[in-house]
Length: 290
Image 1 (tube, rainbow, N blue to C red):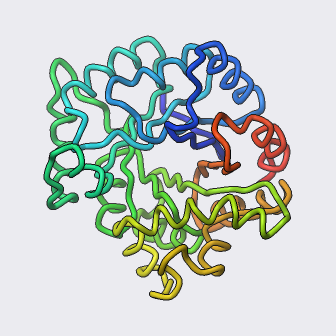
Image 2 (image 1 turned 45 degrees about the vertical axis):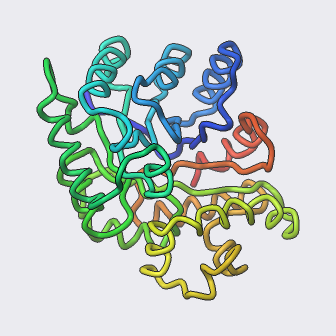
C-alpha cells in the first residue's frame, strides 16, 4: 500500500510544537477530522518521536518529516527509528531528508561540504541499512535546484521544496516528470491587513534570506538582488506568502496544484507560538476545493 498524503497538509516548525502530549493528540486528531492528509514536521529529530505521537493520535493522517538533517542524524539510527514507527503505523510515515544549511550544521561542529553528494551518500546508507532498508516509496528529499529535484524523483517518493512559488513548482514538475510526488511548502497569513501581514511574515522572510540555499534558488527563479536584499522586497514577500481570507489563500494553493503539485504543505504564520488551530479550521473548507 502506497503512502497517501492527500492534496493538502500542514507544516509545523519545532518551535510551535506543544510540550503537552494531550494537546498534541487533540490537535492532530482534529486536523485529521478536518480533512488534511499529512502533518509535516520541521526540524525533525532522527528518533522520530514527534511523528510517532501524531500517528498514535490519528488513524489515517500521514506524519512526514520536513526534514531530518543528513549531517546531524545518523542514517542507521534513523532507519532503525523508521522501522520501529512504521511497524506500528504502516504506510503512514514519510521520511523527509535534506541537507539543511551550512550556518546551522557548522554551529554543531560539523563541516558542510558538497551537500548534494552528502544527500546521495545518505540515501545510499538508507538503502543499505540493516536489518532492512528504508523503502524508496517511504522517503522524500528536500529539493530546490534541478539536480536535487531530479535526485528526489529517482531515489525517493518525490520532492519537498520549501520557500517556493507556484512558478518554482512548475519548473520542478518539468524536471520530475509525471509520477514522483511534488509537495511544496506554502507560507500563509490569514489576514487581509497588508501591514499586519508584513509585520508577521516580514521577519520570517528576512530570516530565510540569511541562508544562501534559499537566496540562490530565489535568484534562479527570477528574483533580483534588490528583491533578496535585507528584509526582502514587497514583491518577494507577496510572492512567498499567501495572505488574505481563506478563499484567497486557497487560490494560491490551487496555483501550486495547477503548476503540478500533488500536495501542498500549508505553514500558517501567526507571529505567536503554538499550533495555529483556529487557522487550520478556517482554511479546511476552502482547501477542500483548492
